Each structure stands twice: as C-alpha cells, then as structure tokens.
Length: 213
Image 1 (tube, rainbow, N blue to C red):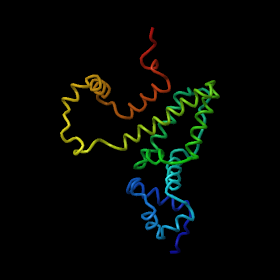
Image 2: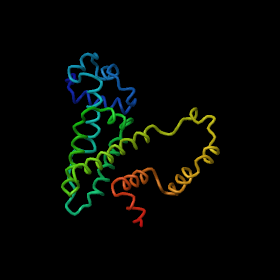
Image 3: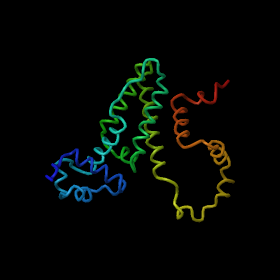
Image 4: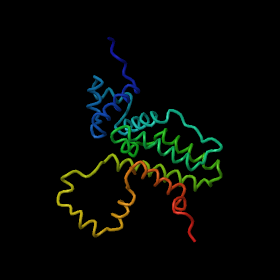
C-alpha cells in the first residue's frame, strides 16, 4: 500500500484521534509524529507550533457540529435560537476529551468567529443594539465553554475529598446546599441546569420567576 501523503488535514485528523485517546496533555508533537510515522520537524512544514496545532484541532471539532451555520427562521424566537446554538457548542465540546480546554486555548478560531458573527448579526437584525448584542452573545458562549470545562474536569477524586467534612460544610453553607437539593429533584440533570442557566442569561430572571413589583 502506498504511503499516504502528509498534509495539514491528515495531521489534524490524527491529532484529534490522539486527543480522544489521551486528552489535551497527551497531544505532543513527538507522539503525533510517531502516529504519523514521521519526525517531529516534518510537522512544522504544515503546522508551525503547538498553539497552531491546538487552534487547528479546535476548528476540526467545531466543524463536526457546525458544518453549516444558519440564521433562525423569521418566526423563530431569537432567544430560543441562541440557546440552541449554545447547546450545539456544548455538544461539540463534550464530544472530545478536554474539548472546552481546546477551545479556551485556541487562538483566532475562525469557526468560533463565524459562530459569534452569526449570533451577533442575528440579534442586531432583530433590533438589539450592537453593544448589547455583543454582550449577550459573549456571555452565552463563554458561559458554555466554562460550563463544559467544569463538566470535563469531573468530580474531585478520593484524595481531594480525604478529610472533607460534609456535615460541617452543609452547616456553614445551608442556602447553597438547599439550592442544590431543591434543584436536582428526581429526573433533573446537568443538561437541564445548563439550559436553565442560559434561560437566565438570555431571557433574564423574569423568564422563570415572573415580574416583580
């Protein structure tokens, strides 16, 4: 079988596979070169440094969830559309280990710029002032990345919890504990929490609590 030509697409595809196997910390030029059967310096003809590689991986994992970008239908509520867009971003990040770290570390991601451009232009087209549109979109997208970052870090391990006194913690922070217990009633998940938080960001507190006097 003839040897496959080395190009940027092949490098990025293999880098995503390495990410899936070992997480971001395992994505090194040495390991990537070994998977491709080349020497590390050969990679630099196509991708000049680790920062460029991380950005290329970010583009690839976003492209999987956003092969195309479309504005909402005229009758569609922009708030619900934006929540759906953020949900797609979350799915893209959760599809790969350290997906949120990849996006947070990427520099000048054109796909993220395209997502932001579409979201901001949609809001401006619906009559939202440019400054407010930018703040809404920035808050929604950064919240999404931060939410997934926390999800992918996982729960504290046993060593971190050693000596932790939950009873003392609960007594010191009763409102925090009550809020967690009240929210996570049977059947309610972190997916619900994600959407409800976005509802607060995009629709505002009045969306769920009702008007105040």
